[in-house]
Image 1: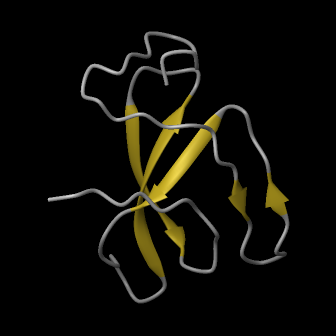
Image 2 (image 1 turned 120 degrees about the vertical axis):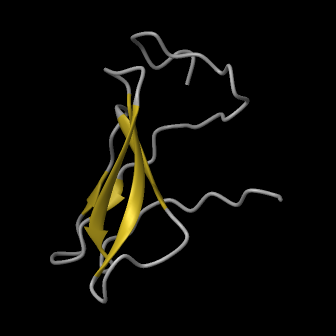
Length: 79
């Protein structure tokens, strides 16, 4: 993420590359050099799950939800 943009560092050792997303309703893959989204571990409701989003224009991460039909990146983290 260090080369992504504004204030990005790898201070916590969590490297990521842009991943884009597949839109569930259409199946269209949206490639993007500006963001990546990772599924979180558990479903929030029956039709949506929490997502961690990282954008090139921000030094923050964002938590949101997406429909489970969407195609997002998966990040395996060793305990």
